[in-house]
Image 1 (cartoon, rainbow, N blue to C red):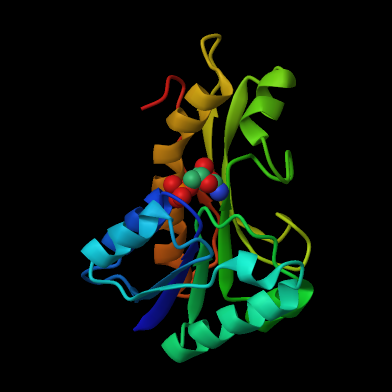
Image 2: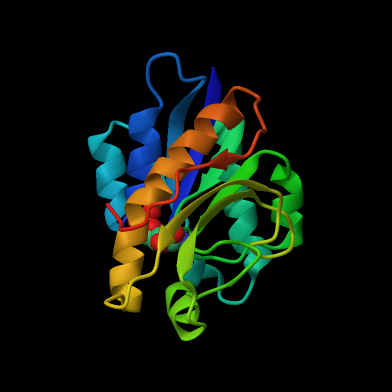
Length: 202
Ligand code: GRF
């Protein structure tokens, strides 16, 4: 059984979807949820799911990213994870950290990579006049939002969409995609996951 640690920074809706999916014949189980923010609402959701939680507040380390990551890595090593899922985790990780977990760390990014790496992806898609938007799950490497893509989901952009509406319409597809990718990934299957295109949104 593969052990999965999930890193969050906020609401943790992707974490909840992943945790709820790891049952039955799924090859993995959640063992730890760590947040860089003690106020992250997702921590209470993880506790409600009886998943061990921990906090490493990045603000205690100022600009010293490596020091923050050393403590984070110590917490993770205690849980002995086989797979790490970044799920709404909003800290940029250094090459030292990503190298330690390369090949077993995943991230969900709310754009159709390689488009729109970084932040404000929904507004950038609207500003570009894109007809299609979506999300990507990729392996994490030292380059931001740039590792091998393991799955994508696409939704149509409508004339009524604002960045907030688009983000809200996309979120359920993030959940479905991340769940589908992790199920395969935990079973050692690296085939790409393509969710069906959704012309009108959930
Ligand atoms: C999601 O859009 C995710 O793609 C982004 O953070 C948002 C919130 O994620 N990285 P969650 O609800 O905390 O999982």
